[in-house]
Image 1 (tube, helix red, strand yellow):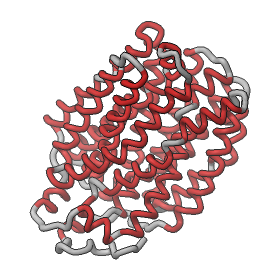
Image 2 (image 1 turned 120 degrees about the vertical axis):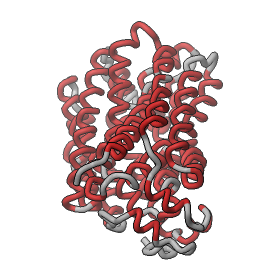
Image 3 (image 1 turned 135 degrees about the vertical axis):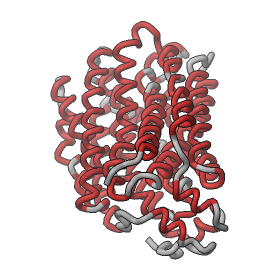
Length: 415
């Protein structure tokens, strides 16, 4: 199926939006040690900033998702990108730890909106048979952002310091100009706009079972990603005493693995189904665990990190399309982002928890990370068969069928 120019532009904008959002988030994980040193505090105290960012993301998913379901995906996406870029710049100007913590909490609100809004705009616009690979591409934006942050840290950190890293993070604001010039509104939203629709609360009430299940699933997914990524640079710098250059290239390698995993399993989900693709990807983590956590040389650690992120982001690569396909039509800009970010809220304790446990065990980050990832890989494999398989549904047609009651196929409490 051939793509229109508008479909290509929407996909590019959503991919870049999530890439640059993740870039701004991950700049922080490289400089925990430096911020702690400047503000005369500990790494776990600074890691609270990561927790606050993750905790506030559901607020952003709710606010920006509601705006997108009411006023349109396109204008909301522009507002969202401008907000997280400005807050990133202000983070670099923080005079003390408390100011930084407040700004990272506000950044979390802005970050929480982008994924759901960009995902809805894209999944409602691209051809149904392309959704799997596009889902992998969108989710690959997250490790792409981590990769960019790795490069900036490796190349510029020695010259610009931790504050300069945040100043670089204002650049995503330029994406707003691209969206304004080249990205149209989603066809499904244009259809929904003309209809009388139940509100957010009413629609969530009609889908209580689906909502609870999706939040539990996304809690496991967020432990999977953040448990394997957020403290990995600190693990390399503190437990292995590697320099900035070595940490940079290892994180570059792991993010290449993440991008490959997301694209491959997103594509595979179009062939074998969303649930089966997630199940297989999650279980790959188990045999990779020893190499990933307990190797001693940079080369072996990089190989383990590469394979681990094929698993983690392979499973994640299917999530944008899967959540959009099982979402109620009336709240597609809100539901996927909200359940994702509520899962993030529950999993937000991961950073400080892992850091504290590791310090108590003599900076043994390896053991703590391995236990977390081993458990959640199994949990995801157990949970995913209970989801619904709605591969390839026609979202525009489904939107046309809304009559003001429950969306067809989304019965109260139904998975």
